[in-house]
Image (cartoon, rainbow, N blue to C red; front, side, top):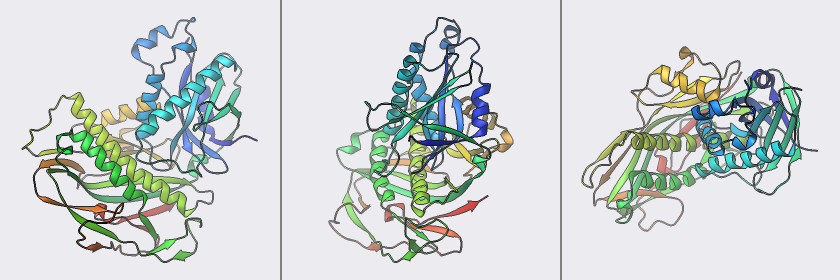
Length: 430
């Protein structure tokens, strides 16, 4: 028995309504959430055509060999940035006028692995051994309306396709718990005499890798207590815990700092979610949103050809705001990022281009308006406080235990001292 995919009915309507308009095929992404028993698909979005491909693909002689994997994977990378914690690109689809054949399956096999490989390069986290390693490929025949659903093990590029069940369910998009928090980050990256010569982008990414390990090892508290990760999210046995983090002095030639407030949001399906599901979804959203903002900033600097400052100058850049927008007919919200000089119309148009769904400007929700997150760098020879949980401190300074006020209905997290702040998030059930 293969995996079962529970699919929002509007996804089926969306696939049926896509017109090939003389093209040989249309491809796109399937978005949702994995669980141990079944996967949930809440959104499908076609990959926008390249302008130069738009005309050539209209010819009847165009073949699936013309599918541009690089363009498709770039679309997947863009869409992946727009997904809050808990949601993933679960796989790919292709629509043709012909029924399933070896040619189609080979294309889908190649595409799903290319997409997963590209997205995995940018993540600060890794999938656990317990998580589902299968990704779905869907072939939809526009002539007969038949669906051919298969899965592949992404850990094994030579794996064979397995049949999977594709079942539609009305109202699936309304069955989600929403998790929200604001994280006040203060990431300090000391630079040695060697790393001080690296680019700001490389030093920032190196610092984020170290910070990500600390976030992964954070201890999350529910109502002031550690909760058994295998318990249901809304109930369960409380445990005792005492987690401490130390700080050391490190001589450095400069530093990179990321400071500010970032809004984090995650979703878990309401079918008996576990504590570990909620914590994992929130951790990954924290990691994703900080890394994505930095990546977008460096892309913008490169695009606008803004040179880096000289060694003696301090460099300062504001990271983009996070903007949320609801999926039509759903309680789930996706996101994008906005610089201060970008208009609401530009953000709306980007949503429409990437997701192929109509978005209204009044639906845009700008997450941060104050305490904007920023990245700065400076060169100096002063000693630097650097938190570490990975190795014994060379010269211990103090022990830091973060304290968060307990509130009823609040999930709190004790993060390691590198955050210099606590993390708390609420869960909401619709």
